[in-house]
Amino acid sequence: MKFNIISMGEALIDFTDIGLSQNGMKIFEQNPGGAPANVACACAKLGLKTAFLGKVGNDMHGDFLIETLKACGVSTDYTLQTDEAFTTLAFVKLSPDGDRSFSFARKGSADTRLCADEIPDALLGAADILHFGSLSLTDEPVKTATLSAVTRARENGCLISYDPNYRPLLWSSEAAAIEAMRSVVPMVDIMKLSDNETELLCDTTDIETAADHLHQQGVKLVLLTCGGDGALISCQGSKVFVPAAQAQVVDTTGAGDSFLGGFLYKLCSENNASCLITPAQAEDFGAFANRVAGFCVGKRGAIPALPTLSDVQ
Image 1: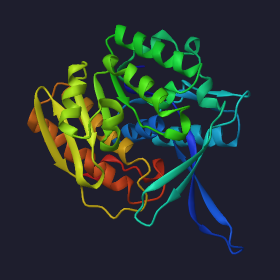
Image 2 (image 1 turned 120 degrees about the vertical axis):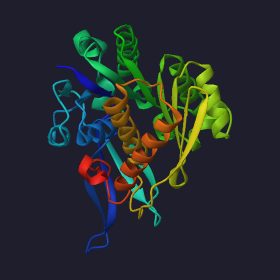
Image 3 (image 1 turned 45 degrees about the horizontal axis):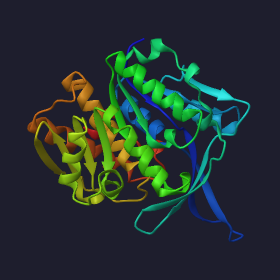
């Protein structure tokens, strides 16, 4: 089967803080998440043929994640389950303005256990775009599996999409994170990052300078999100800044992932998955992606808040 998008990496449970019980104890809502899983679901709900490549535990949370992916239209033929590790968990605390902070239960968990020999060559030759994030670079054996998949996918003519998605608690040090996150940039065609990650990736807080720095390393299309301000789309020497869609913010979890899913949808459906786009396309694709993100931040959780194409239209 031919896929538009293969999204590789972590699928996990976001336990989102939703208030207090009658006994005054915190209540956490089970929400499906994980940045690559969010991207897969965003693309699938908009209408792309999408597969998720990763590993979850053979437990109640892993079962729930696979059911969720399927319900969104994502192929789970390459979503593995293991008895040797538990599904990754994240506990999400929301601030009054919808921003979030995380605590993770991930040491030795299922998503870090994916091995290179579990990824078939046929899959990597059956997609327009392979997407991955930097959390697949934090631990072995998934780090080696990811680098192998990216290398093989490139050899098969697949475009590579990358989101550094920095989570400091999951790295041994900031220096280790910087080294690993930067190491894969020369292998990437499309890169989505947020404005608070430019200093880590590019040694600058100026978003246009950061985009130029990434282009110099071979990235063809840079999507740089700036929260409620909007996003910079940089390609072929042109830069377009697209304002954010108006939205009532409840939970920003998955905002960047939904933006990327919306952009990849337009890229695949209207530009034949070519990452060389015109300024007019950059403005159109970016505005659409911002509308997708606007839906996502309007509800708790990432995947449950993702819109369909008819919602966005």
